[in-house]
Length: 251
Image 1: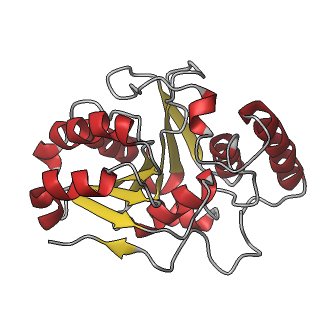
Image 2: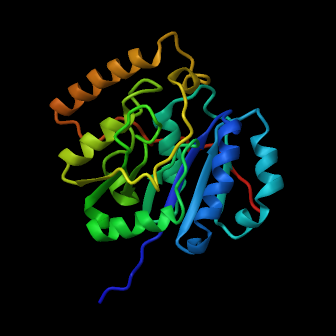
């Protein structure tokens, strides 16, 4: 009998969303504390100016000291780009399984262990696991889990897409065509999120387009890439995400 239990990294990205992460992060850390030997929370702050850094330092010293929470800070991304931000957080993750956790999302009680158990059941090396409620407007669509190895093999999120819209769909479709098994759950215990408007999501994006316009253009670009057989994203880039001038807060 194989008793190996893989570890999981929740990958969180944030830029000036303190109002939301102040609600979700303490809740998520508490809800997964019983399994912190298996779980890390990787929070990458892309130059927030709303007090996030001071709040993290004042309230989560013990979590950072033991490695349960990893807090990184960088000013290398002046304007928000979802794919670049998510790729950065996933690359900084140390564990075998990586889950995108938008900063307005809740894991649910023991939500990390739930994901680990499901990935083991379905096959860590062959599965893309989607915790989507089936309600497009509730903020749960981006809860996507892969092994870190498979995430890197598929090229991560496509950084050639515009800053917002369709990057999650693109990752899922490319992964499925590449042969990963798509598994889905709409279990409401583990996919709650704070409701946001699309306009709020564009607060830190430099664009004259709205979310729907970017989403449509990204859909067309993704479709063209896939029809051309380009399943691995970012192949022309030297690296994905941000690698330079990332500061980790250690205690």
